[in-house]
Picture 1: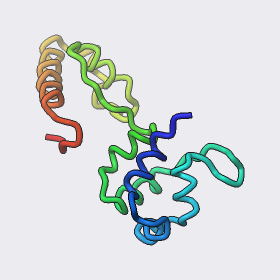
Picture 2 (picture 1 turned 120 degrees about the horizontal axis):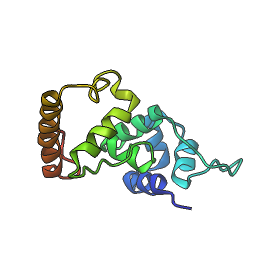
Picture 3 (picture 1 turned 90 degrees about the vertical axis):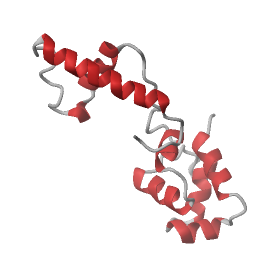
Picture 4 (picture 1 turned 90 degrees about the horizontal axis):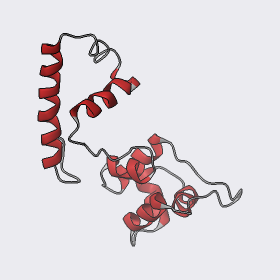
Amino acid sequence: MDNQLGNLLRDLRGKMSLREASEKSGLSHTYIRDLELGMNRSTKAPIKPSVDVLKRLASAYDYPFENILKAAGILEEYKPTDDLDEEIKKLLNNPENGVFFKDYLSAPEEKKKQLRDFMKFLLEQEKDRKPGDPQK
């Protein structure tokens, strides 16, 4: 079983004791150890931390929250393509974007061209960004 989050948390903790990590994060030392092992030791069930727990650990370990979310499988690493129409479809299909793109398909061609040009600009910015760099 792949325990990417647990391995990352163990590496981030380094030589810090579980009790020190507990004090810094506000989480119990036993829970932190369960997270590192990827399972609840009393039930042997896989453990799925909440976003709040991951945020506490990111803060305690002074590590980018986005990277912890990726290790936990909550946030997928964004990999842009050169296909602008495909990128626009991703935006349209993402319910978090709400009504922002809802009228794209029925928009006049000039408006679609403007959006594609803007998307091209954003994708070029994203390709230039190195992992761990802040958003431009």
